[in-house]
Image 1 (cartoon, helix red, strand yellow):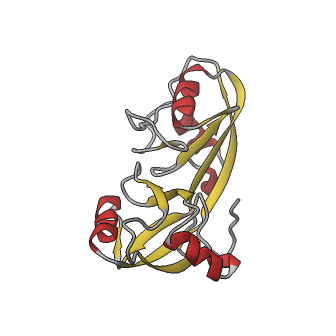
Image 2 (cartoon, rainbow, N blue to C red):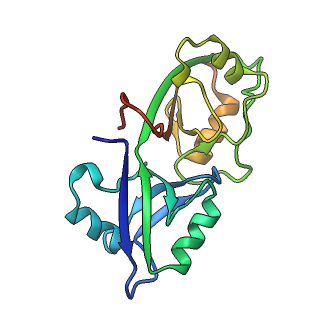
Length: 189
């Protein structure tokens, strides 16, 4: 299946589309939950499996508006009919080692919430910049907009934020990002 698909939803008498979205990265809307009722679940009942909305998908455009999560939310508020461009999330897991002598060197939200922490700026010198310089796989480099979903056994934004400051030894980082716009080889989980 394609990593990108289109969705058309109509609110009708409802005020909601039946989606919870996270806007921490300010560029895309991350689907954090789908309600049991509403236009989104109605869409999923009728759509082919490869075109169903799932937790972890990224809404990258609404009614032609892209690149700004706030403007995309405005499109949902002011229009009864909304057309989404949605991309699947790509799951990436890397293994790092920390001894407490280096900062991570990433900027994340001051008020973490939701599924994970979003990388808000390019890495400064530190653990993540060292990883990015050492890896031979460009797709595994940690980038602006990546959502760090798990550090070691810690998941959820607040627990991940805490773990970043406390983790020692070897550990896994699990993150997700939107699939590339044009991709012939990708995976999503």
